[in-house]
Length: 250
Image 1 (cartoon, rainbow, N blue to C red):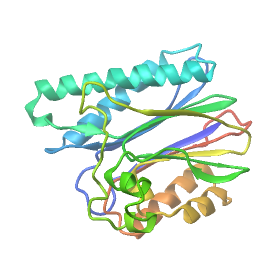
Image 2 (cartoon, rainbow, N blue to C red):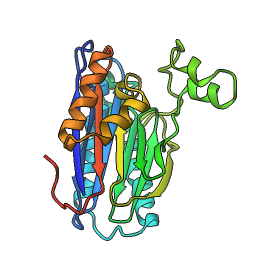
Image 3 (cartoon, rainbow, N blue to C red):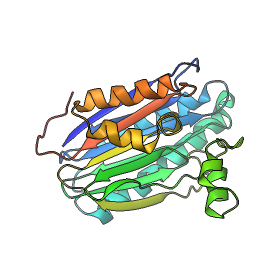
């Protein structure tokens, strides 16, 4: 298993409110996370950093998560705990009122990947069947597409494209999507914030993931392309490659 995480402020924003990482637990399984914070007075970076810090600590102390049921249960329980942690922090710190964050998180073992998401940060899989988005955006525009009110092409330029219907840390009980997929030799899992997915199309993602660069270079090329296409938002991604090489591609 090889993995890389990169984040970039982009060309317009003054601060980076994204956070994430790839972490190993006691059994050597990976947890990859991308969180895109939101909220005034720079509270977005508080929400995303708190989310990553809490999940990293819990994951690094965990073991015995061997089945899809174990992984999905861990994600649901721990993300809900973080949700309450963020709500409590915002309640007790007025400067953080209204803060929240998207999250896409994947537990990756030697046989499967379990992915949870809230908001519009995304997960993609590249395998022998092709390239596919495996998460569903929890956004107003995506609901309009799903209900047939606008086309997918219209959604790309919709004025309310950034309106989220769900975010971590904004309500006492948060709904999340969780699914498990088979993860096999040669497969790539890409997690990213909308700073990447809004600026780099799927054809470009496929081309970069399949080129001869190493994982660090692939991640850097994706971020470079997002910046070249405007870089109006923070850009964050994690790539995990199923490989019989056990060390990180660093």
